[in-house]
Length: 253
Picture (cartoon, rainbow, N blue to C red):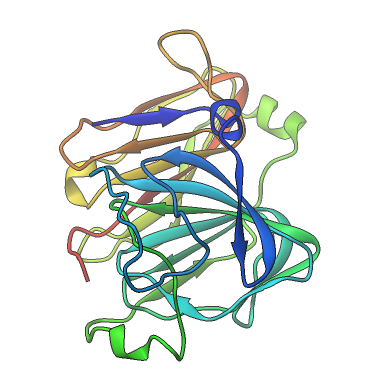
């Protein structure tokens, strides 16, 4: 089932959670968001069977310690600045981690750092290391990073005449892959078939994605497609469109 939400709709449900004594903000996009900033034994289960996608606003100079999750996920850094582990996490950067792959810390800079967390299934919360090492299941660890993606100046995007779908994480055997789509004003393109993976997220990072109902999706609006749905036919608005296309792998870790 397709899930689509605008940035304005998501910001309307923005709320705070406490993470190691710091105030983080979460804006819900898809499914049920975390109720706490950390996993605890007996954590209430709010899984409604939907994928899970939300925007995190992490405050300046705060640190999210190394941790892992149970499910595969993308993270997209869209604002502020900081690091994920030893890697710079400037906007726009795309990070992928398999479930049960520890990563981090996520360290926010002077302006804080804002990033999406995007999953095909609900996760019960961050399991921090090393205290949760006993919950870390064996299996393939995988970490991919596409840093510092170029977002076009508005005049350049408006002048574009040819569409492009540029790989940013090369396709892997289980369907994991990611692209950035670039379309000039009114440009159109059929995107990859979701059937080859475990669900697709589409995140607008510049310009507008035209919707059939006339209420176009602007920057930081998001669409999720399950693997059983038809491919998205993307059409750019009057200023063009740049959008991330991120496909999760077919297999759970």
